[in-house]
Image (cartoon, rainbow, N blue to C red):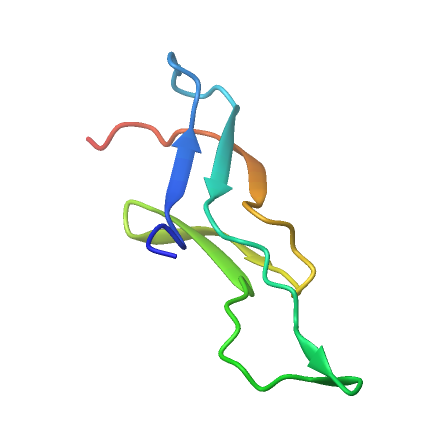
Length: 87
């Protein structure tokens, strides 16, 4: 469980200002199945991803809401346009 929440991000190796690029993100997270006993969920501290927030230069760029049925090691992809350089 030590790697839970670790993130791998992949962007194209060459990005030009103004281009739209696909940013791909993999979140290392096991899929936990809710255990049941006599038809009722077992009270346990389950770990689910319920929100993914993407920030860039300290500002929120995207937010994803998920459900407990998200897969093991979920993969997200989003388009992004690099900002112009600060002057």
